[in-house]
Length: 279
Image 1 (cartoon, rainbow, N blue to C red):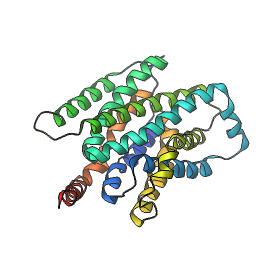
Image 2 (cartoon, one colour; image 1 turned 135 degrees about the vertical axis):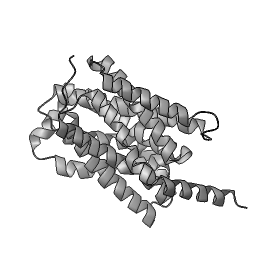
Image 3 (cartoon, rainbow, N blue to C red; image 1 turned 30 degrees about the vertical axis):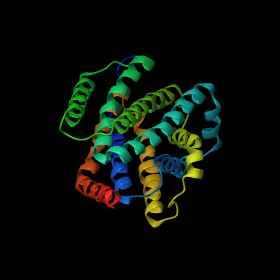
Image 4 (cartoon, rainbow, N blue to C red; image 1 turned 135 degrees about the horizontal axis):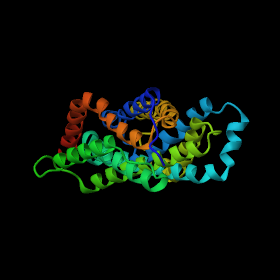
């Protein structure tokens, strides 16, 4: 398969989604909600997917297209990878902090996207992907160098899983859109989000500590409306107009919002750790 040409509007939409996604970690840390990562991810997917569904579904033809065999398989893969991503990424941030958890996931994302795109669709890997991947891997190596930080091994593993899930979702969502031009991308995204919440339902039911607190409700509202409904609308539209590897590379824009709030997040995390350590 030849490398797809990118257009500026498509790349811009993906970039906008990446920036919105970049606020997930800081929002989670600053809110300091007692709700567990899996439950939080489930509510984000369910409510965000429902809102996106309401805005995306325009007519019955958009729904009929979802029953096609060429749609169902990649749709289920997207749903599974989305659900696993939520639990893995939010748990990684909870264990390692917003900055480190994000860098690990983002360092993995373009690598996984390029590899899966090559295997699944035969898309050629360009120089931009090679350079961005090398930079991401180098950045991760510096952060994980001895003496640079005390990292939680399980948190790092969860970050790697999250980045891999991002790559899987990107490749299969792109493949679905390319092979089924009659399907409305935001509609497909909304369905994958709602289905992705299903495996997280047990945690949503059992882990409800602080669910109705102001901080938790505010956090869920932001994650559902801004970082899910709005972000996946932008991403699903832009994905159809940019190559898969370019989309993976643009995921590196996610740290921008995190850098602006890194000091607040770090201070808040350290404060909470001191409180837990206090007698």
